[in-house]
Length: 319
Image (tube, rainbow, N blue to C red; front, side, top):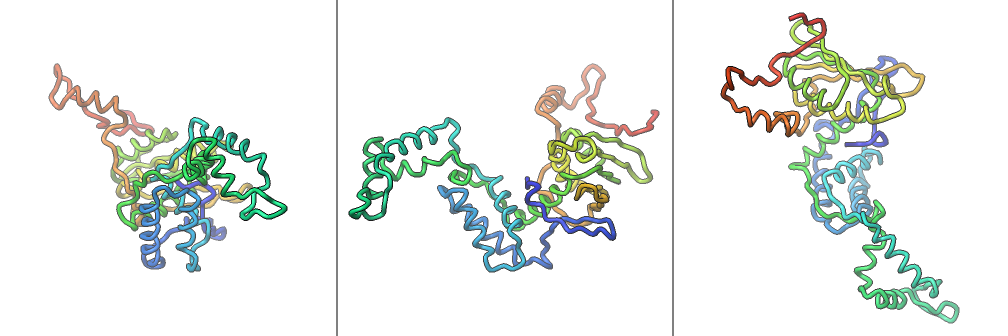
């Protein structure tokens, strides 16, 4: 998931609307080729540091005028999210640094070529330190800063099925960054009610449901209304979005607090806007529920039949 620092939003205070940055085939056709190149960098980048990978991604857009740095950083975050990096969780890098710096201290300062003022060459001192430690220097150097995020090395890359999937994930990610600052969200749905409620409950969102003509109205309270000092609820609301995008026939209105002490702006979204969420809706909410349903089976037990979430309960319902 993208961070708030990756947000690119376009504000219209006159109409009180806000929209998220979006890449489309009509106005950003060149980005399909860019996405292919980005995937290739990570697919062939095993052993490279996070810093080196990000530098190559930025280089891809060096000659592209329509690409702000924040958009490139967002791509890097999405690619990192489907990657695993070597991490030093036992503090071995810090211990190795202490050992290397202690051994190197007496030879300070080091120079590339020794002369009558500076007698210690860097390469010779490194070899001496490697001999003391008993490990070749080429094995020591990658481990020295393995606990620093930028210097962690790529281990595996799950990737995206296509370049278009990466771009679709970017578009959804930008919408999610706006929901971090939502005051509330109202959804009018004409189909897939059970899935919408399931996703709201899985995201642990506070919600109310009311019957409306041709469907239901679902109201979600946002992080800006209930917990102004934490992003945790905003993240939960953002996690709900891909589930919503997988549903049919809905319209969403979210009131967004884009600036303190400024009027709220509306984010209007519907199932007809063409956003694509690459996710599958789980059949069960948890492993416990799945195991219970499997143990019960499809046949009645002593006259009882298991129906999972068969009825939608809404506000004001009496029967």
